[in-house]
Amino acid sequence: MKITRLILIMAVVNLAIMPATGQKSKLAGAEDSLSYALGVANYKYYAGDSININTKLFSKGMTDASKDKAIMNDTAASAFIVTYMQRREKARLMAEYGQQIEAARSWLAENASKEGVITTSSGLQYKVLQAGTGQTPGPEDIVRVHYTGKTIDGSKFDSSYDRGEPAQFRVSAVIRGWNEGLQLMKEGSKVMLYIPYDLAYGERGAGNVIKPFETLIFEVELLEVTKEE
Image (cartoon, rainbow, N blue to C red; front, side, top):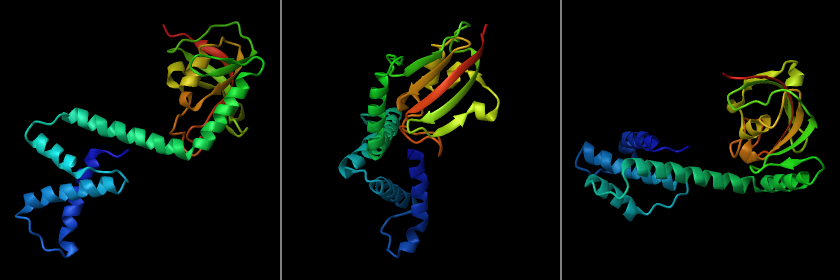
C-alpha cells in the first residue's frame, strides 16, 4: 500500500540528486529547495502511478494547512488517501480477475441448486456428509479437525489427512467461511464447505497457493471441541 511517509523519503532522495541534474537552481536556500523538492516528489510519485493530480487543489491544500484552515484535518486526510488507494487497488484487481470472479459466481449458483446444498445469508454454502451428535463449537472454542482444501477446478492446496495429523485452532482465528461453517457443525460430523472469495482470502489471496478472488472447497471433519470457560 502506498503511504504518505514514503513521499517524504522520496523527496529527500530527489533533493539529494538535484545537483546532478545540471539545472541551475534559482532557489534561495536549503529550506526553499526542500519545499520545492517535496512538491516535485509528491507530484511525480502520484502522477507516475497514473493518478490525476489537480495542481491548484494540491497547492491549495498545503496553503490551507499552513494557515490552519484546511477542510480536512491530518487524520481525515490520511484516512482518505488510504481508503482511496485501497479502493483503487481493489478495482484494478477485480478488472484483472474479472473472468475468474464470474466463473466462480456461476459455479456457486449451479452448486446451490444441487441436492443437500444449503446457502446461508452470508453466501456460504455447505452440505452435510455425516451428522454428528457431540458439542457445537462457539467462536472462542478450540477445535480439532481433519480437512482437505481444493479450488473449484479440483486442485488440492492443503490437507491435514496428507500430513497425517489433525489441525487444532481457535474458531475465531480462521477465515470467515470456516468460522461460520464450524459453528454449524457438531463433534463427529463431516461437511463440505463451499466458500466464496469474500468469506475466504478476498482480493489478496494467500501467497502463491490461493489466487486473489479464489472460491474454495473444503471437506471438514470435526473431531473434537474444547469449550472455553
